[in-house]
Length: 138
Ligand code: HEC
Image 1 (cartoon, rainbow, N blue to C red):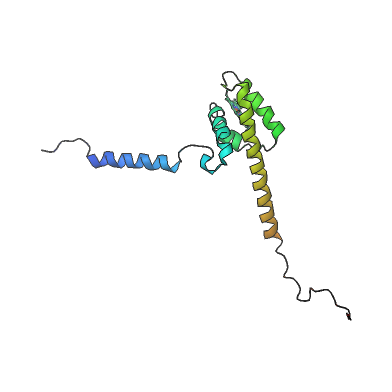
Image 2: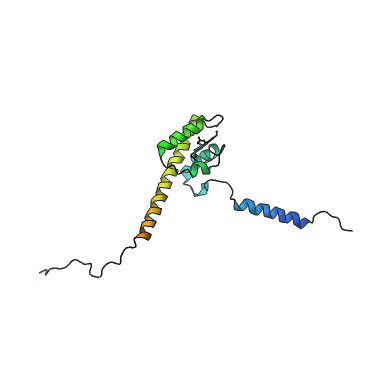
């Protein structure tokens, strides 16, 4: 006689779906540390730990801030939030990472602008007679 317990394959399917859901969101939010230069990884790790306590890392990463002075300002403000867990000593490495990140953002921005320029103004094909007129050279 058959029991009414759900079949095993249903559990297997549920597990599979769960696994797929996790895989699609990636291992962790934020940047892929393996893509960072080795000397930036430790700074990034500290930033990721300290700056994801109250909001997602997307908050700083997508803020569009690419200026050291503004980062110093923000990190100071965040450190002073009650229970931030950010110490004065943490700010050095965190700001070092944010400086690196700002430069990367500026670089990407410039690259995008250049790509747009190229797309907007396709260089005209150079005229066939581009060479300067030659005078009789003797
Ligand atoms: C104690 C909790 C806490 C921690 C830890 C924290 N934040 Fe925040 N953060 C907040 C709150 C609350 C706000 C929204 C209010 C505000 O803008 O001040 C915020 C907002 C921000 C914003 C503004 C985003 C926007 O849309 O304008 C940035 C940027 C930011 N945080 C960066 C950081 C960085 C970088 C760190 C790590 C050094 C950090 N936060 C750590 C609480 C925190």
